[in-house]
Image 1 (cartoon, rainbow, N blue to C red):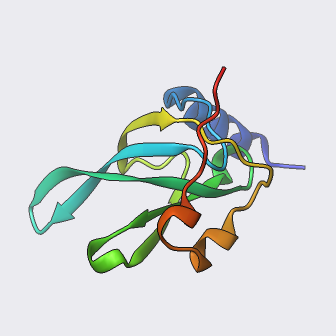
Image 2 (image 1 turned 135 degrees about the horizontal axis):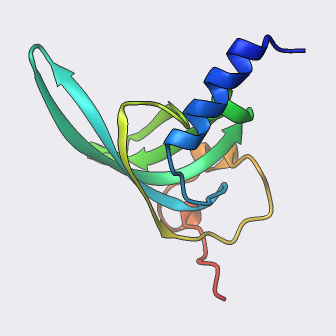
Length: 118
């Protein structure tokens, strides 16, 4: 049982931010705020969501993208983070698992996820 003050604070944080529906396999584009000394800028980070975990304010998701020289880069983002300025789902993926950690061992066309058609 949570403290009522903590529960009300979490409810306010959940209502404040609007997150689109997404799941593992979807390709997302995030605008992440980067702080460099005194300056702040928004940098885009685009990749495939390979996992979601937690619920409520504690929810996180892992995004994997292929960086320079075909090196895989994964970042874990808190879902309701203040550093995420924009959140856009680019395409929906057709997958049968909730965690796509097997993509780490695949390269090229094998690592491609089919698009979900509706």
